[in-house]
Length: 230
Image 1 (cartoon, one colour):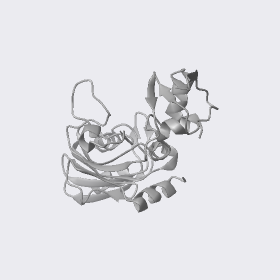
Image 2: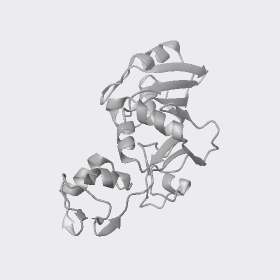
Image 3: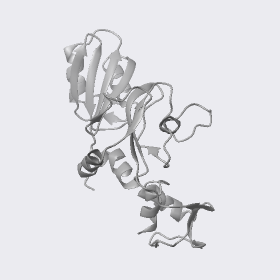
Image 4: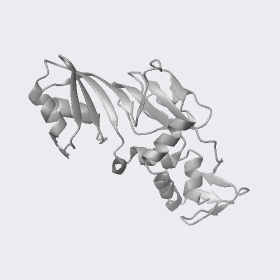
């Protein structure tokens, strides 16, 4: 297989990120600098920064992320990470991000191709959030959230917005901007007090306790792959 796909399958990086590693000369195959068009055979020795890597079995993990946990593989400040929580034998990395002060569903995988497409805006993967906000929601605010809100980085795409209580709103987005839900709610006058992601690409964590995780089923993985055209 092509070198970037091999690195993705090994859980090192997505194909695009693997291309950058290769361009920077950080990848060798049998002691020789790898190129973008290098193919890897079964007995070839692949190293990144001098450390040997091997193709792993694919792993797909669903985590119910608690508050106070960072969405990274490691943290220089020593805070708990989502990778620490799942404690998976294979090297898995988070798909996209959830802020430290946001809880809920998060996927982790070493399937670089799938992770890249799930996180890419082009594929418009559906994400559902429930936000508790300050004040009593109004119908004009709900309508504005659904139609699109003007933010400093442009107007948000149309979304589905539904009031769940006096101070609670559900938003279904197909974008993934930084802190988008918080910024949207603040823009319409209702700052977020608590935020939880309840759905992602048709999956939920209704049967996964906070802080716990489970492997996706084969059917769930196939559904994700179909969703993003793999």
